[in-house]
Length: 229
Image 1: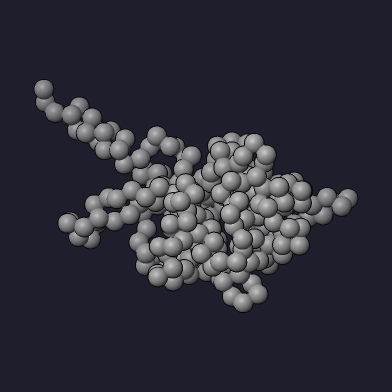
Image 2 (image 1 turned 45 degrees about the vertical axis):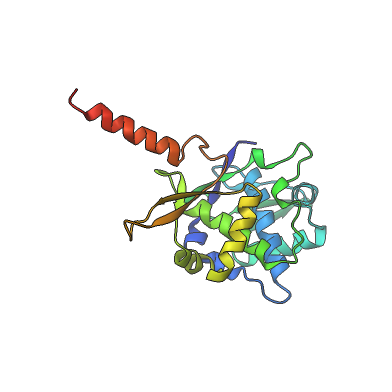
């Protein structure tokens, strides 16, 4: 498994995350769906988007029961995020849109323990809306990451617009990601107010040496190289 894998993001940029809400009787299934999607992406062919993943692999990686995995996969199919094909009692899952333009880099290998489980998900109980919101934030940051800055520069208003997470719920979801080391928050000058700052969200293990500190040094070095002395 590589340090990062491709994740189709057209559905995210089209507002698809808003369909994953914490509704009565559906919230845990929606969280399970995004957890399963992480594992499918980690095992998918980078060109075709196809992944042959067993329930055992999904159970071990996510800590979910087989019943909850089945519900999660059903949600992904219903929203046309994956396609499932069964041959000789073996399932092949295909990430929809992999062959088209529009994908983001999703962290992979270094998220796993030696036992094959996703460390980030160990404390998830599927009983809190914050867990679902944190997953949605992670997928959104992957989709909105700029290759020039290696970070997602997105305001709270835009987070709500793209993900459906209420503005007042964003901070707690973000705190969960930060606590588990799934996102780093950089503070950058605001493009609206010259005296203000805005947040840039950086995904770990994706070009880890490219961040605000190194970018600033690179800019200074480039400026110095242009000086006439």
